Image (cartoon, rainbow, N blue to C red; front, side, top):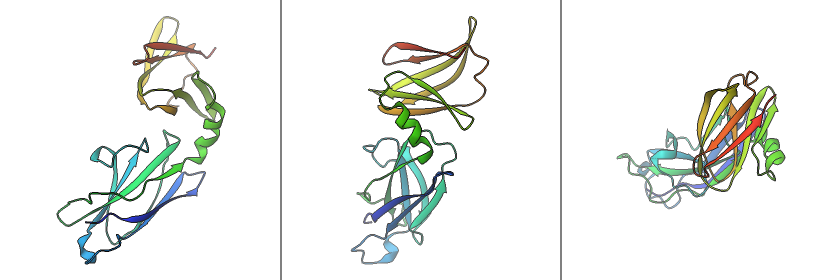
Length: 193
């Protein structure tokens, strides 16, 4: 089938991170029944291919829009594209244009950290975030340290650019947080007390 056209991505509600995606049925189709479904893809990087690894949702072809909220965004930018699927689940060889959405609730965090090369711990609206500006893709290991005891808080893949990582749970019991970067072979301490 032919790929959808004119994808738009709009923030409907900045507080709830409500997003609306809409697109047009592929132009030049001889038969409207050629498209049975639309496959929506969400990627971390604008250059990522639309593959099953970043498949977001499949919806019937009688719909050409989707609204949803991102309750716990884990990145500043979300990139979306759409492909058509026929009744045999063959997908269009090309995709719609890629549209990006900036999560408004994270925009101010980004502005605070974009010039910093050191990881930054930020508390906003009762939530704790670590902002990391990484030059390369890397693997992060985050541990809470109390005296000589370490507790694993999370492991996360980092993309090149700004990474905004929400920390779940109470970190107030720790003296410091250790950030270990696998590729850089580097460790950074954030002192909490």
